[in-house]
Length: 246
Image (cartoon, rainbow, N blue to C red; front, side, top):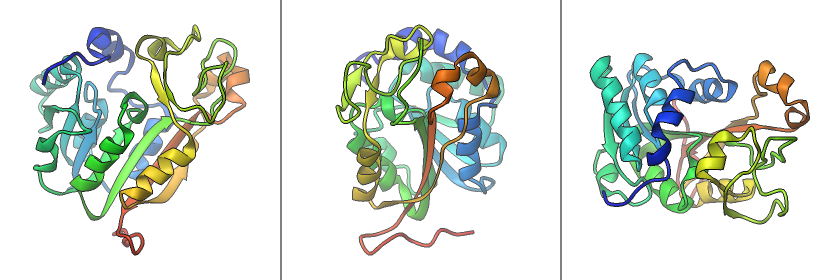
């Protein structure tokens, strides 16, 4: 793939800051919404350096991870070589990459904190829906679209703008270290849910995990508001959602 992804230049910073030790409330809830995992075939879009993919593989899933950042995919592949778990990684644009649509059906597609990094939300959700079998699960975690931020912590939209004003922007909060470097796309909650619905992904469960107590103690004003949103959808049809298997 041609081009440079936003994360290519900060791959070392990102991989060092988000390790394989998954103990943050949002990621733990995301993994819980994907259960049962063992024996399932799963695709992670915007997989980054592969931390969620590897955890799913440890839990017994057959996993494919895809990301537009060649640098992050390189780190994911290096981790797989160092400690093989059977994860297959692809350098791919998940909004338009035909190879992902040719991999066959998956039981679940997951995206951990990646949708706001993707400029073409509709394209990414279309790919996810096309990859799922009927009744399959799409689960994602994002910074809560309604999070207004706090002192030193940027919210989901620019402080000078309105919640309804969607688009890409670069955070300026001193404690928002990642989004200061790569920016993020702000979208309303309605935009997310309606995009899922257009692609026959029907909201099945959502959660608003509270941040880690240590994080909240250092940012009490920010922690007063919803910080994370985790959603699970079921692939159905125009007639309504399919029945999700137990």
